[in-house]
Length: 112
Length: 113
Image 1 (cartoon, rainbow over the protein chains, first blue to last red):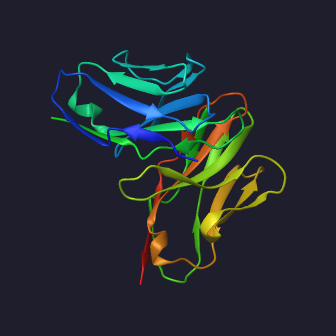
Image 2: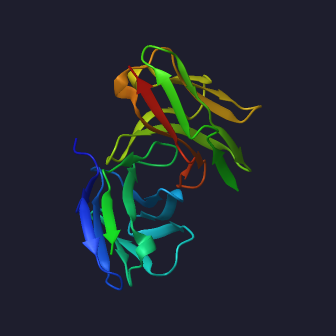
């Protein structure tokens, strides 16, 4: 069974640009979550989608948005990039409540 | 509100020695408990989880953890570490009715030959 796939693995963007990250969950998993990992703030929850609906949202500005498609694939978008958005962005899928999350390898975003 | 505290940011240990990585949590609701490991430039891999039942949980690679409800702790242990265990370890909680993880700040385990 294929794991969680995130693309691209690495990205370099310029301040002010926008970026879209993609995540394909494990087949059959309908819940997809996104996390930001930085050395200073650690792992922080961005949002969670289930059946194309955002169910939970973390404490991030509106520049961070996401969506989920009918095949459970998810995208995350960051607009007007800032230097502080440089981070490893991790996607996770879960088969249901009360289960572990399966993480992708992440997308390393560098904003210059 | 939920929070997770990993008391040690770095733990150096010699190969074949035992190790314990400490994790305490605070939560106003019931939670599930997890330990994940992260190797450089990789995502998170599940080591073990506590959902219910026996408080001693065994995971992959010889790791185990014990859930202590009265002390709100979930410490990770391994009786004999290998060089390949060098990585960063994260303790996490997930509330029963909320599909979100709260992570600790991580403990870097450095196994020396």
